[in-house]
Length: 349
Ligand code: ATP
Ligand code: MG
Image 1 (spheres, helix red, strand yellow):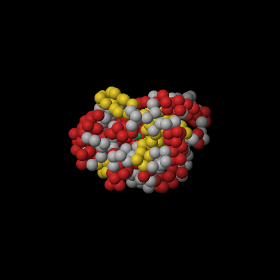
Image 2: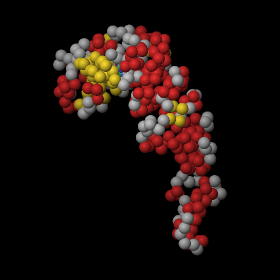
Image 3: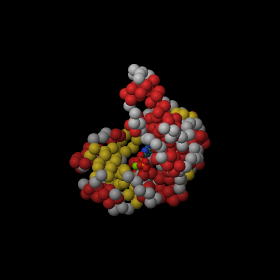
Image 4: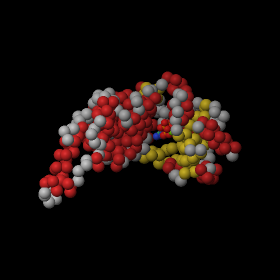
């Protein structure tokens, strides 16, 4: 992956542009963590980038960054810029393209995210990122209060990085979050959910959840019951969402919503019970059972040993019931059918 990236940088420098890998990929690289998308920063304008990579650009005008696909690897290429006049504690009102890397680094969120790599694979570290990474500390680039007031997503990003990397927030960052946390209310629910999903999906999630609780960000984020999910054994973020009581404004895909609601219901059932297993299936019962400390192996075994797993396996038709009882069709058919199903599930029939 790195070799594909360096090749792409070389293609850009050959055309006399300055171009560097920046941010998460380089940070993760020095930490020995594999990461999938690569951010590139350059003095080439979006128009110039599109001309250069005509055949591999994705149509996208998000913030003036250009997405290029090379050998299945996704590159986000963004022009060096200064950002000013932030609106709604989120978006810069003015973006100005510039020719130098250094001022572009100053607009970034955290020192650990300012590490760059040139086309020879050399690390460029203008702001002391390597030292912060070695110490495992998250500091903002410049004044923390300003950074969080400009863009309150950075508050959630700070907690996300502290969680995923198991780093500590600097004293200044902690103080600034206390002072500016109310601004996270202004973020879109989509953005809030994206960051929370990343925190909830981390194996180190409890650290992030505890930080959210310590800062009382659960109130700003309208996440009720957050303390209840501490220490739970969960497989993915959806398990956590199913336990939380959250604002209905959080956007879930239809399939996510169904899963979340089913896990929520299965939490109140005995997940070893044949009817619960049949109705909600193995996955949902395993998620609920795991959070309650049940042995998933046990749940799986019980599920496999159910006499039936679907309606199609019940070998009786409405016609047969009607003939046996000598009755016309009616609501009673469903009652009998449900009864038969129950008797089979509990191995009495
Ligand atoms: P990851 O990709 O692992 O989520 P990342 O640090 O690469 O983490 P991205 O969202 O991909 O995060 O952003 C790339 C880089 O852009 C960051 O490393 C950081 O330098 C800068 N950046 C991203 N979001 C912000 C922000 N809200 N404010 C300031 N700089 C940002
Ligand atoms: Mg990234």
